[in-house]
Image 1 (cartoon, one colour):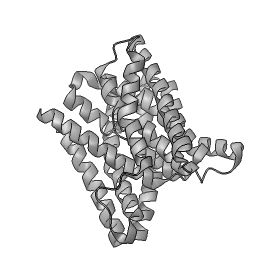
Image 2 (spheres, rainbow, N blue to C red; image 1 turned 90 degrees about the horizontal axis):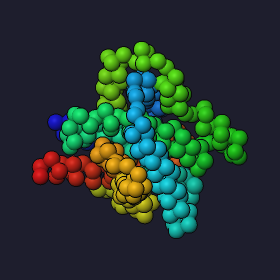
Image 3 (cartoon, rainbow, N blue to C red; image 1 turned 45 degrees about the vertical axis):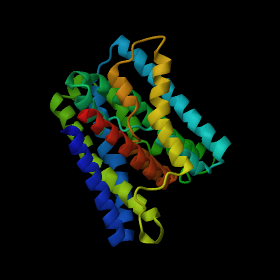
Length: 307
C-alpha cells in the first residue's frame, strides 16, 4: 500500500506540474521555483533535525555507514570523470550529473519500499542509512558540488564557499540534531516530521513536471523524456554503480544489512533538484534523471511485489 500511495503522489504531482506549465508557463515555473526554496529553507530542515535527534547507531551498523559514505564519494568521482574527461560537459551540466548520481530518494521512496519489500523490522536500519548517509551526502556532497559547479554560486573560492554555507539550511539542521538531546525529539514530533517528508513528495514532483515541460520544445513534452548521455551516466551511477560498489566494499568486512543494499539502490531524490535550482546547475538533466531512475525503481519494486 505504501508503494502504491507513493506512486500516486509522484505521478499526481508531476502531472499537475506538466499541466500547469502548459496552461500558465510563467506562473507554473515561478511557483515550482518558489516551492523548491520553501522545501530547502522550511520543510526539509525539521525532517532532518527530528530524525537525527532521535536516532541511535550500533558499532556494526557504523561500519556499513562509513563504507556507504566512502562509496558515495567514489560514485561522485566516477561521475565527475565521465562528465569532464569523456563527455566534456559544462560545469553546470557536470554538477547536475554528479548530484543525480549521489543524491538518493532514501526517505520518500526508501521508507515505504523498505517496509513493503523487507518488512517493518528493517525500517529502523533503513532510517539510519537515510539519516547518516543520505543526510551528509546531501549536505556536504550535493551542496558542495552545487557551490563548486553552479552558475549562481559566485566566482572564486571565497564566494563559492560563502554560497555553500549560506544556502545550506540542512547542514545546520543536522548539526543541531546531532547536538540536541533525544528529549527534544519526542516520538510524536518524529512521526510528524516523517509525515511532512511524505507531504513534500507531490510538491517536489510538481517542480519536476514543470521543469520537464519548461524544457520541452514548442510546448510539447516528450514522454518519456529522452535519455541523453548525461542522464544515462547519472542514472547508471545511481542505480547500478552505487549499490554494486557498496556491496564490493563491504564483502570482505561485514555482512551488509539488506536495508542498506536496498537504500543504496534508490532513485535520484527530489533534493537534487532543490540543490540544482539553488546553485544554478542544469535543472533539465536533474529532472530527467529523477524521472527515469524513479520509473525504473518503481517498476522493479512492483514486479518484486507481484512475484
